[in-house]
Structure formats: structure tokens, C-alpha cells
Image 1: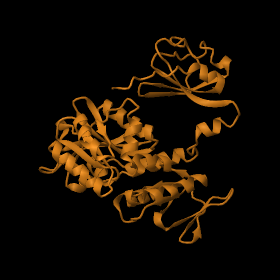
Image 2: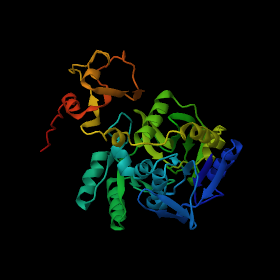
Image 3: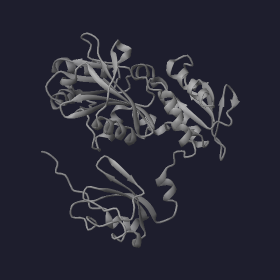
Image 4: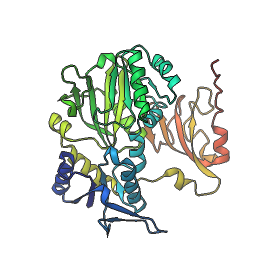
Length: 385
């Protein structure tokens, strides 16, 4: 394969390791500076130019997009997608994971642990938000910070209020989060590739520093990750649409607590701590997946008028509970069950004898009129006075 690694630093450890892994497996690798692309938009002919020369014949790209160039970097990745080139992480997944507020909003809908989080725009809402998070200390976090930059521990409500006001006065967007005291100074980084955790390490802060990032002097050691943490890491990556991700979690009294999901995780610390050839695992995964580029299933399957894709939540009173897919009569009503989401597990292309249980979510394709009759009415929530 001909692979492009989008990186502004060809001498960075992660970039060099990916190039080495490509060559070891017989592939041609080129490191291309993301900022040196020109995007060419034309009817039926999307294209890219690099240093004023047209891009040709790449089979796949590995985006290593820095936070400071997210907007342009994801535009370049998006153009590769329009050209039919396999992208290890899609532009949409990178964009979502980079926005901490957007990411935590999406994750909050699912069965994964996240710290209690508040976001406010108006000065009058700062103190009430801090109080809702709980007793200090609290975490103040910039929406687009990386490597521990822009993460502040406030020891009192007044200090937290002053910090948020100061940052907002400089047009910075910030989150206020509950501080998980029992994990102070340590966290877990799990490296997910293709729906599997292939390596994990525990990071410990140095001295009085509460941030455990390696870039801030933290120490690292390999860790045998419990199943609950593996499931959380994989689920988080899948929710945000990332095929490769560094998932950071806290070890709380309530189980794994998600901190961040990184779309361009550094490889140096975790490879050295664990001895795992992560770069090689990434290329192995690409070899298998390059034939199956990301597609928008809703867009493709709804081209036929009157048909669509819908999520059907199965409540305890549903007529489908206890029935197999074949006995449910869905197929006779022109509805196909594409997959079943059961707690944190996805069952793709379920067998016709698979039983439907309460709490399942069926991903179905079929007639919109029929799908409407299967979706239960939403419960109205009372507004607090």
C-alpha cells in the first residue's frame, strides 16, 4: 500500500515509528505536512494538491492532526474521504473528540462513567455551576487544551469562580468538572486499535503535581487492565467513531471514569512502558480495513424513497420482548434488524433465532411508516420550578 502520514513533525517519535512499521510490512510511507496541502473542490473531481502538485494513488492516510490546526487538518482529511482514500480516523471523529464539551455531551448518553461536568457562558451562572459539581477542589479545563495544558485544580469555590471569570474574560471556553479525589495524581491510558485495547499504562504525577501527563514529568508503568476498563475504553472510542484512540480514565470508587479520548495518541510513552509494537498493530489493522472505507449508512440506505434507518428501544412492555427476530414478524413488515445494542455490547447482523430482550436497542432498516409504529413515544419530563 501507499500510505500518507499527515504530520508536521517527521522527526517525532510517533511519526518515525509509523514510518518504520510501514516499511517493515512492505508498504510505502510518505510524511506530508498537513499545512502544505491545497484543497481542490470541483464537481465529480475532488482533489488535493501538495506543494502545488496533485496528490495521486494513496491507498490510506494516518492523520496526526495537532490541536492547533484541527479545523484545517480535518478539512484535509475530509477531502481524502471524498476522494475515496481510507482514513484511519475520520474527519468527523477527530472533530468530535477534539471538542471536550461536545465529546462529553455525546458520551453522557451512553453507559460509560464520566465526571460530573458543567459549562456556563454567563458570569451569573458560574457559582451555581460550581456548587452543582460538588465540594471543592474542582477541575477547570479549557475546551481545547492538550497534554495537561489548560487543566487547573481550584481548591475553593471562590478560587474556581475567579479562574473561570479570568479565562472567560480572555474569550476562553472552559468546563467545570468534579474532582475525583481518590485517583489524585494517577490515571490510566488505554490504547484502542480497531475495537481492542492492545496496550495500557498507568501514569503517575510527579511530586505535588496532580496532572499525570508524561509531558509534565509523570512516570509510567504497564498495567494489566481489568475487563471493566477495557470495555469502557473500547466503548468510548466506538461512540466517538475513532478506530485508533488513546483513552484516558480515572480509577474512581465508582469504576472507570472517562477523562479524555485522544484521536492522535502519542506512542512513545506507552510503547516504552509496555513493550508493545503499537505502530505495527496500527498498520496491521489498516491492512485489513483498507478495503472497507467508512460509509454513512444512513445516507446510503435512505436513498430509496420511504425507507430509512432507526433505533428501536425495547422497553419491558414491548410486544417484541421474549421473541426471536424471525418470530417477531419484523421481516414480514419489511424491516431488517441490522444490529442489536445490548448494554455496552453490539451484536452485528444478529441470527434469526436471536431473542430480543428488554433494554435492547434494535438498529433497523425498513419502511419509515412501519418504523414509526415501533418507536415508543418519548416521555415528557417535568421542568423543575
